[in-house]
Length: 126
Image 1: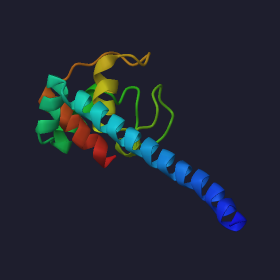
Image 2: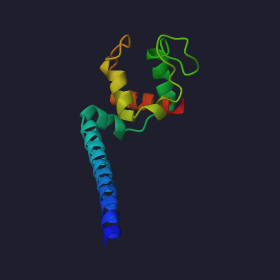
Image 3: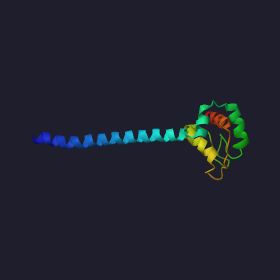
Image 4: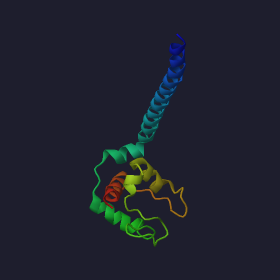
């Protein structure tokens, strides 16, 4: 009888920990889904994400607006190297980064939805 009581005392904290971990995981998943829905609800973002980008057009946009500070090859410019940036940042984060101007000295840039879709497609390739 004493053995059984000792096993239950050990088992209960483990069960509680497992239930707590599961609850935290579910809460994180729900929060992520809610944030994603809120982000995609923005009309500009929704419009950009509904379009198919052209990487060649995106390259031209990058050369005209971004290449002066960014490069995809080395870190010798003012801005960071953008090689693999789409693997590090979500499409929403990239759109926000480009359009917000909240990262000085990066200027605010307001491309049309198609231009932004093209730029995103180009950034996926570098």
